[in-house]
Amino acid sequence: MGFLPLGPVEELQGASAPGPLEIRVYPGADGEFELYDDSGDGYGYGYGYEQGELATTTLRWDDANSLLHVAAPAGSYPGMPTAVPAPLVVVGPGRGVGPALTVDAPTVNVGERGSTTTLNGPDR
Image (cartoon, rainbow, N blue to C red):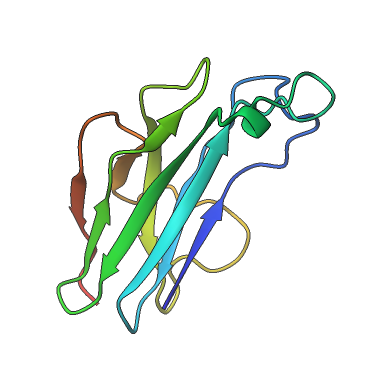
């Protein structure tokens, strides 16, 4: 079991709003992943993450029930978005393969403050 967060290549951290994020789940067992996020200012601008200006969001996969649990984020940083919509792709034959982002996947809000989300994965 594994998680793979995918996003576009960024030219310079902090230069603009982050692009789309896709979360790929490789099923087969239960698993957990901690998604890290900060303001992206670590390229000579102030290094806020060194002062604790960061957020982590725990993703937990329940394989038997094909459920993704997305916890409310721990921590925060200046300019943190209220939520980041991210397609959830449970990888299988012909699904979630290759570098291209998936266009028809259900979406989960990652980093939604004060809430925990549970999303059903597709039938396998």
